[in-house]
Length: 226
Image 1: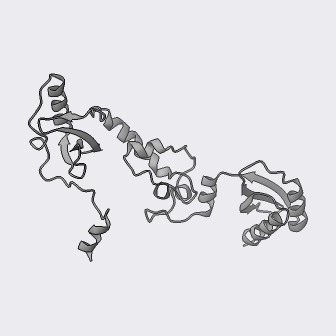
Image 2 (image 1 turned 90 degrees about the vertical axis):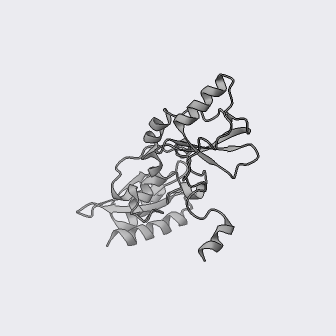
Image 3 (image 1 turned 30 degrees about the horizontal axis):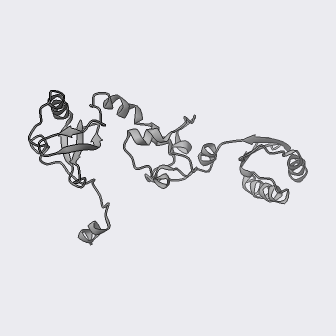
């Protein structure tokens, strides 16, 4: 295959010229009279001298085409953390911007290592379900409002937008979360607005809900799986 040795040789030429850019891929036309060199660079690069060297070395017409890091990952391909082929390499034809707000809406941990794809940018899949989350959250009560009971004040910890459940914990007892249906949360908030306090949240809590996230999140949990 002509493209691979051409790309490697062009990288050596780029390094010799000390240009701050990376040749990512090379495509030859069918008649082998023209080659397109795809590259990434953080800043504007003057590659006029590079083009002269490439033309002399490969005896073809040269076109330089800058691409972004997402397009680079799409060209290189690979397997994502989900175990499937990269979306950008398999079916995506355009790239929407991805913001950390997409992760916040879906209540994902803002861990850069987990949120970043092979391109180093936020994973494109963060956008796939964010609209569903935004629509579902419209029916939820204000998460910033605490629930007041005779037992104490409780603050919102997390939500399950599809099960319509919100988790609350009392002040000073954040490890003990109670899952409450949003209709009950709205009922408690209405009581609070009218100056009334329910006895506690336990009377509203879902009985069989998992109170800890599924999986091993603490070092101490590992021993039970050995």
